[in-house]
Length: 115
Length: 110
Image (cartoon, rainbow over all chains, first blue to last red):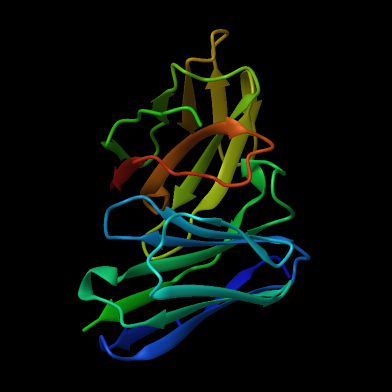
């Protein structure tokens, strides 16, 4: 298995809702990442998990809460989002941190719309 | 992380060779140059990586001059399916994250 699987593919949520995005990989990768991508913009790094521990938080608002329950799974919990948080949320994994930019595998993303 | 500059967009025709140039004047000795491709509504996909001179794989070639202040991604005989955004990244192999620049939006015409 050489894929990163993200679910759901599409999500519409109200500003008072709580929802979660899920990311899964079975490549034995020990680094996992969340990126946010607005339309016609490059992906922006949000969080980095290294060996199931949060190693980088790029000053992301607390309404986004990441979780890494095990080495294969990465979640992004969403609460009290704003319409401007609507974007494509991408998950990625790599063998380990610091193994080079050629080793990242990205999922297809979750298209989030906040209404 | 060295800053990169790429053209915002390019148009080409099917069957042509497309060259996308990336400037990275502040590249450091330990930096590698990496290119990713992103189709609409998909995540980026690794294309090619190099340090100096020329690298070729089944998808593309990467040309890096001796001063390494720029690089050129070459796509041979493009098809409509090569329409995508192409990102040039510069950084050390030991970097624990990758940061995307603005990318080049390539549009292939029939």
